[in-house]
Amino acid sequence: MSQEMAKNEKAALAGIRRSAAGIELNLTTRPAPDVPATVRSLLRLRFASWRVPADLAEDVLLAAVELVSNACDAAPDTEIAFRARLDPATGAVWVGAWDTCRGMPTARRPELTIEDIDALPEDHAFGGWGLPLVAALAADCGVTRTADGKWVHAVFLPRPR
Image (cartoon, rainbow, N blue to C red):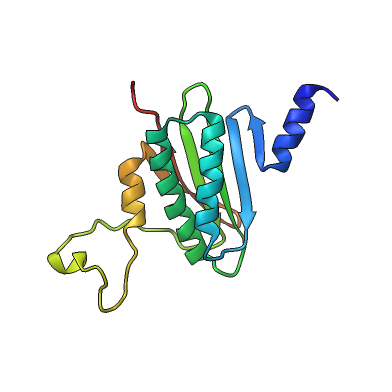
């Protein structure tokens, strides 16, 4: 077996694959409270090995956790998937979370009041801030329907040096 084949086989076992589009990390799992933290940890390790700049990595990690959290909430009783892809030529990073929910996410444009800043609202209603945050950090984001669900994704570009 050639070294390249052995390398690709080892990478496949680790959830990484090389494709024409770049280097990918893929994860499919059942939703659980620890899934966003697990994705963050796995992605942080991959970014170190992929040599993604720290400032870009932090933005992508935040977005990845938001997207995965939303997928877990949208489809709590089915599988979800997460994918991250690095384009080595440009340094761009694509991240996406897939779920089986047919409903489309909606990013609200929050109007903040002093009451919204309360550390613990009486109704304990947090949430609704993730997609606007992802949209603010990403160069592009969107939703792609699939036959059995949807991918919510974002693209991040490295900052000029």
